[in-house]
Image 1 (tube, rainbow, N blue to C red):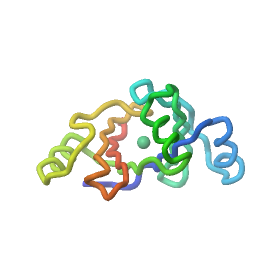
Image 2: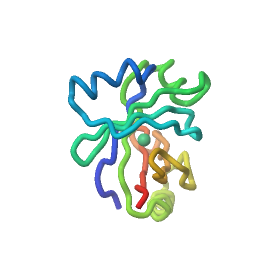
Image 3: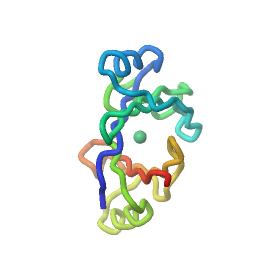
Image 4: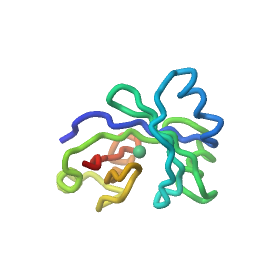
Length: 134
Ligand code: CO
C-alpha cells in the first residue's frame, strides 16, 4: 500500500529563519515555497534523495500548526507516506479500524492529494497519506 516516505513535515515559526539551515548548511535543494490555504500554512519543500523535508510555517494564529508550535515549539510535525491510490488506502485503513482525520482526500502542496491518520491510530505520530499529482 505504501511506496516510500514522501516527506517529513517540520513545524517552524518562520521559514525565513529556518530555511538557511536546510538549504545552506545541509545543502538541500529548495524545490519551492507555496501557500496551502486549506491548511493555513506556508510550505517550503526541500529535496533529499527521493524524499523531501516540508517546512511548515503557520499563516494564522489559530491554525493547527500554530497550536502545535505553541504546545511543542518547532520540531517534527508529521510523516508522510506516498500511496498510489489514496482513496483505496483510506478505505482499507478505515476497514481495519484506523481513525482518520480526513475521511476524504484534500489538496496538499504541489497538487498532491493528502489525508491525515489520527495520531491515536498511529502511535502518537501524526501520519499523512500522500498521492502525488501525476
Ligand atoms: Co505534509
